[in-house]
Image (cartoon, rainbow, N blue to C red):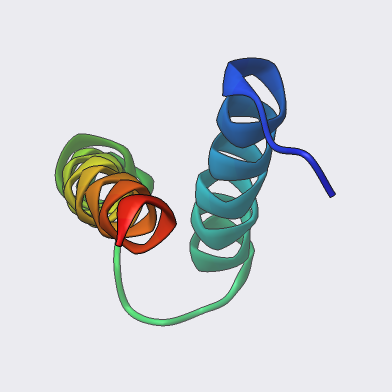
Length: 64
């Protein structure tokens, strides 16, 4: 499967969205404000860092 920016963004948002939705619907002891103000931003930041590292690793593997 060929990945481009649009497919990558949709997959990224779907993963983060599912994670946030599960945390909001399950009784895990966190309030909605905690999930939306602390957990969701940290999921996004970590996801972007992991995506950047993965893209760079893929570029390295493609050229060597």
